[in-house]
Amino acid sequence: MNAADALTVIFCLAGAVFFLAGTVGLLRFPDIFSRLHALTKADNLGLGLIVIGLIFQSDSLAAILKLLLIWILALAAGSNACYAIGRFALARSPQDAVREDDP
Image 1 (cartoon, one colour):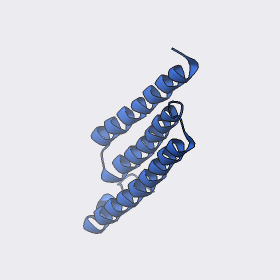
Image 2 (tube, one colour; image 1 turned 30 degrees about the vertical axis):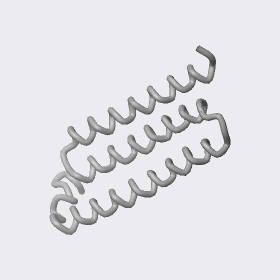
Image 3 (cartoon, one colour; image 1 turned 90 degrees about the horizontal axis):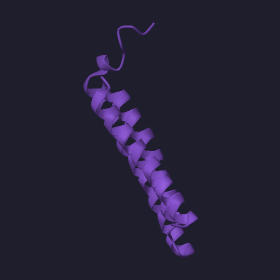
């Protein structure tokens, strides 16, 4: 195993850990807004780490640019989808947006 393979394994495992953390946050957090926050942050970072890991295995600049483009498009799509879900949830039940313990 050379250095590129070792870095690929390390980055991909770190990305998988962040995906797992986002999934746990999705299942465990109490309201939709905190669930969306945990899921988008962890998934964006997890995908970024996996893309970095795959960059070490790519053999051309075109492949690297494709991986980075996929990451950027996933970031844009994820943020827009979560924005739409959050707006829908806020319009559907605005009382859930404000907690009882907020000042």
